[in-house]
Length: 185
Image 1 (cartoon, rainbow, N blue to C red):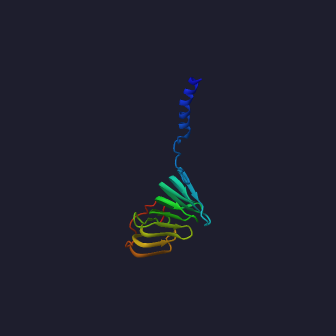
Image 2: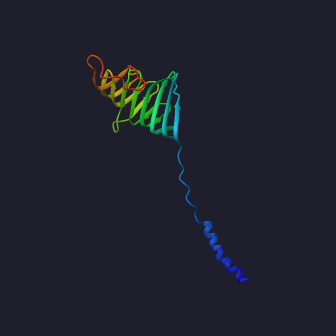
Image 3: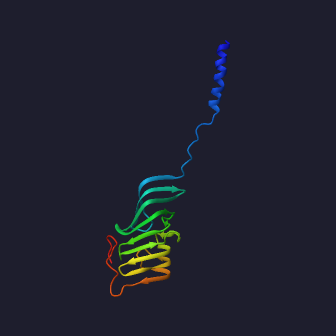
């Protein structure tokens, strides 16, 4: 009988050790949702307006969506392409407003190219019902070139406000042809 108790006495501590030993650490929980290779459509409250984004990833964090990596956005009004937006990242906030560290925008009507802010100059805010807000802007078009600070404008650049504007207008025509794909002066 002792020969059966000895293996049991050796096996019981091993079994107890394995049972009480902590298991492998669980991977940390991933907050929110992460999607790779995304196409994201945004339908703001404004009638007939639609944004389409393509990017490497979209992450949801606490009700806020971050779209980043190779980001290209397009704004359509009544089914027609109105503008293009490129940025390293866009945050879609409640109310469908967009925030970016900086952005490049092409507005087809008027052939405008805008550099909204720059690294280290402050964020860009794009409000769906109002337009662009940026701490700094550089604008290039066939009939206008320059930069300004504390910039705000509607999407068509019909109502501009800015501080310290420094713009040039070509004498007798234009700086050159429209370079915005699909754009018209």
